[in-house]
Length: 89
Image (cartoon, rainbow, N blue to C red):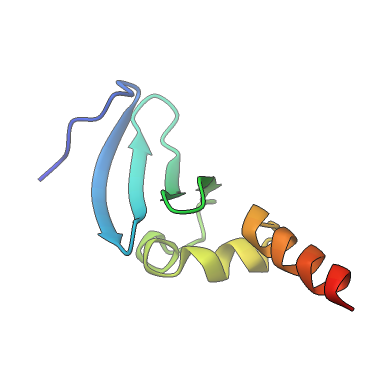
């Protein structure tokens, strides 16, 4: 069930991929931190969300972009879209 990954300090609990976007749920045994990582191959975007003890890991895993937006994380593609709209005006 657990996936071997290149980072020995983290264990992959779940992963999914759709349309070139890879989402992974990771757990660190040494720190007991749970992290959701998102890698978008098409846009070369990557971000990590470190969960606090009150966040539901599966909710963040299934909706990482919503959780990133709620935290105020600005993704590079969003910034580029805003700049393109501003330049077109």
